[in-house]
Length: 203
Image 1 (cartoon, rainbow, N blue to C red):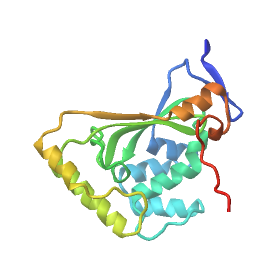
Image 2: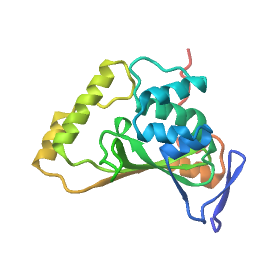
Image 3: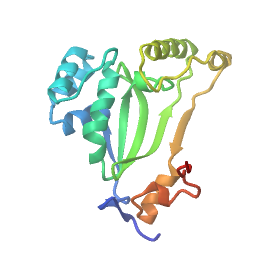
Image 4: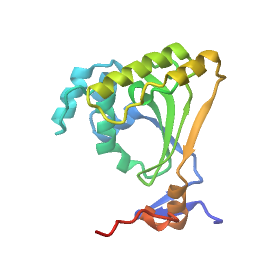
């Protein structure tokens, strides 16, 4: 396109300057204007995080974990502010069960998502290749599913078996090309850039 600046949802975004990097924890503390959350989250202090979530006016459902509360706060308070290209890093393990641990940060994993214009554009992570740890995480996911929490991974014993046979270090990355098309064509609606958008069925 011969340029680095594009308009999306009424905002001008600049793809030329270095993209910001921020941890999910710091992002939550920043945009909720509750800096104490950083300390509570890194200390895995569920009760204090729960208290702050309730003080902010959100409900805490039965069986929700610290990871669930973090995701709730991020969705409600943070995502809409990530206008300039930003790598969100260091996700909690419960919502990223296929990802290697973040070095020196217990309970968090080596994953990032790219946000532009308040939208997620890409998701990437270092893939976990430890079969014992992966089996434990699948068991945790199964417990979360039994507790009624959505979007949990199914236990995949074939995958664990494949890891036991041997898997080299690997990384996964997914890029939303329809989101890129939205950005480069400066479209506010994803329907306008999808070749075959879903339509409502008559009757």
